[in-house]
Image (cartoon, rainbow, N blue to C red; front, side, top):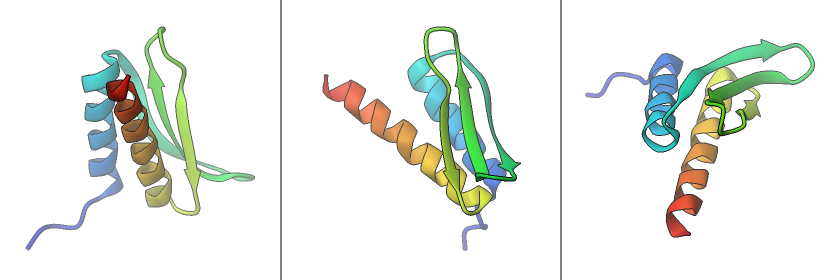
Length: 79
């Protein structure tokens, strides 16, 4: 039986995706913002913008960010 995935596991997965595709990754994490809710953020190197996603829970936010990163990588690979 597989252990339950934690937000930390998901953050590591997003970090690996970003590192493998974009190269330079400064920060991947989640924080709570009073007006918006949970925000997941990937801060990439100088050549790229920051990627953010929000959600009702911290898990939703990091899953949303992972999906966004995967879409960007897929779009890039199609070009």
